[in-house]
Length: 178
Image (cartoon, rainbow, N blue to C red):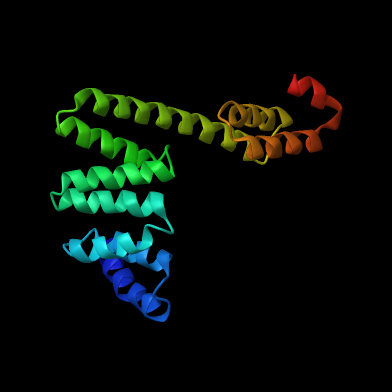
């Protein structure tokens, strides 16, 4: 892994020389450098990537800042990541840990419990998605996936799952949808 990190770190700057505003390259380079001792450099690239990839870049930035001992700045970075994606598992967990370490135990524990709930939901979604996407998929599995997504306010994806179910078995669509 370290060899790949060093290789990626040596290749990615070339992309930034060609396209200095390439947020994807900056994010990749910052993430790779975060695994080394070049934390200041990693921080710069991640800050550059943050406007284009706010959740991932701020999450990675939070980890860099925490390694540097800048706990308040790390907390702010994790909060920005969660502003961009309130269900970003790593940011929820790391922010919860930081709050506990700072003595804000109640707030930290709430976030850690929320993290656990999100993990359980993602596991359930993964199982439903797997059932709906196997070669032996049934319309019922797509309906179950659609209902889950509807319950979790993923409306466009839910509609797509229902349409797929109806296309597979038009005769039973009304009964499946309830």
